[in-house]
Image 1 (cartoon, rainbow, N blue to C red):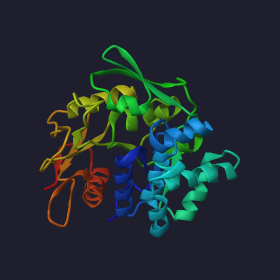
Image 2: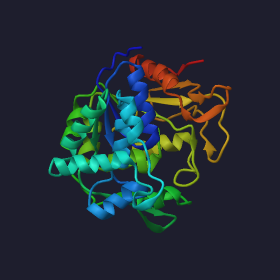
Image 3: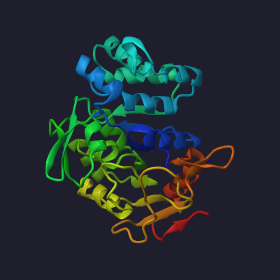
Image 4: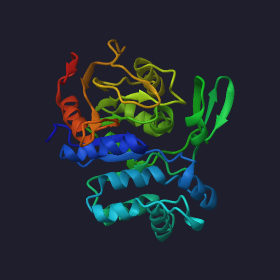
Length: 318
């Protein structure tokens, strides 16, 4: 499977970004992942507090999604279950070791990790500054990604501390050279928009001639966006971009998964969006049961269309 867009930058974090990266591999494309480093929970949070570094967990997940050395990737996905290392992911510890071995050069450490894993693409942080997220929710100030993600109530504003962190120069260069930039899926504020709070990265996205594609979430999980419709998700993205609108929105249209969260039905009227593409994007197990995540193969098929089709009418995939 191929697409006319050969230089794809995927911006986000967590499992959603990983699904897009695997889909790009299915399309025969070696993408560049630009990843949030603001996580403060779990293994990443502990390492941040101990070592004063940026969050490594989302970078690790992106590397493993691109890894062709699958046996090594399986080992690095291991999470310890007891002792002083309980909760730590082995891949995070490897990135710490590589960063210390490169005298604190995170980008050089990522290049070495890509070589070890034989990655089909590149991984970069959105910023090299150890940033934290803060937000105002229902009139109250809330700090930290882990807390914001779980907070109920309308999120009124979100920002980084420090406010104006420098962007990773290689990430800006990748966006400037891109044919397509993909935003999402993933937690709207804490995985996607958080990257656009890095001023130079946001400016690069807005100034780029690349096709700007948003892969919409299938549902809004309980917490930060449970009150938002799909069209409101897109409106929030546009507000974060400021000077640019999304060109294409890729949406799930099909059976809804069971479980917590508010289903996001395809939106019929997305203001300022030139094109929408809908298809059944969910995973199926061997028994045909529907999962809650984007299926990389289905997503690859639809992304290839979204990146190659002329901007204009709504396109629907059965």
